[in-house]
Length: 287
Image 1 (cartoon, rainbow, N blue to C red):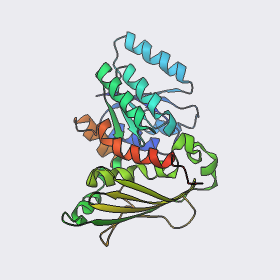
Image 2: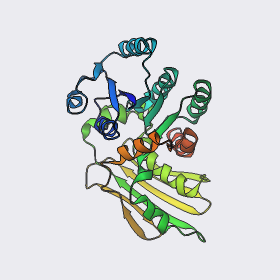
Image 3: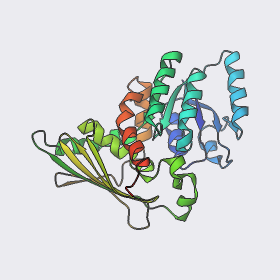
Image 4: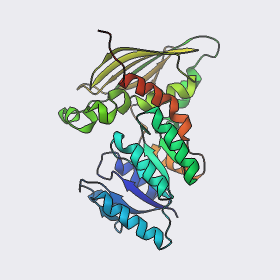
């Protein structure tokens, strides 16, 4: 049984991490979130300690380490701009990190984390769960090996008025809608088609984005939106619609089990999607 700490326990995605820790037969010993709406923990780990102050968590962890107790993993579900710092903290306490997408916001952060992995001997794993979705294999089946692949991504996941006023609506903190929503979609594109050759951004707002990605053997058009309306999560690959409207409930558990089995996706494997998101975020429109 492995010991886990969860950072970001009050967010909407946190229950999936808690469930995954439980489902894989491990123990959650502490959670941290400055917001105290963490009562869901009672259903899974009622003895788990809660900290609203990171300094108190840090002090508690180092006390455990001095007593010889090991922290095996830190699960990170904090806001995007804090992922890098929380991954580095995890490595420094001798734990592996399991981090929500995006792993980091900048490619420079990848290089720094790789150096810290070598220094500490611990690992960072990104949680790009779409790779484990049942329908992802259908994308592979629809890809042509001998001609240009035409892919249209139409990914609309409505969010309320709160979205633009939270950290998610702040491009500096979230990376924008292309990172919040698009990061794991771009990861799938790079997973199948390799290194991108060109990016063309047609429109980019806090809640809407349209553009194209070009690879050696594929041209991708994306439309991402958090505007109100009917949800739609579809990859159209060479005329074949592949829906991702369902099938997400147990994906975190699948990812956790892969990591525990020594088959987690390394930092380097996330570089391409982070490069794409970083370029879009820093794109300057012509005057």
